[in-house]
Image (cartoon, rainbow, N blue to C red; front, side):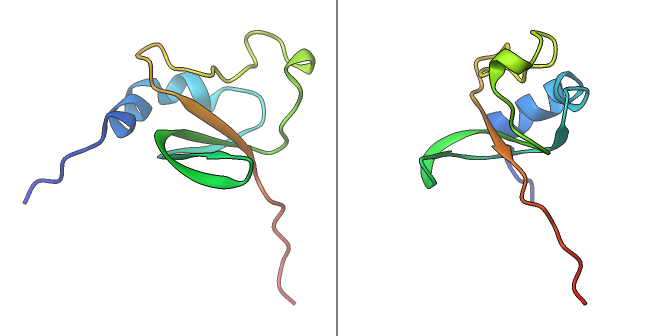
Length: 86
């Protein structure tokens, strides 16, 4: 049984190297955009970063693009801090 891959999965595979070297990069996955804390039905690539910074604090090379070269939208989210269980 073959599983069909989404456009976003294929874009992530193609452009992963573009993302992994960005400042604060943690992970990336094909999923759905979140707006004002609400999950939408808009497919995109969600990129997790350790700390989300204002664009004015990043150089052009450090910024994660809003859209990949193939037109796939991006959503940058700040990762939650993990704490060890005792």
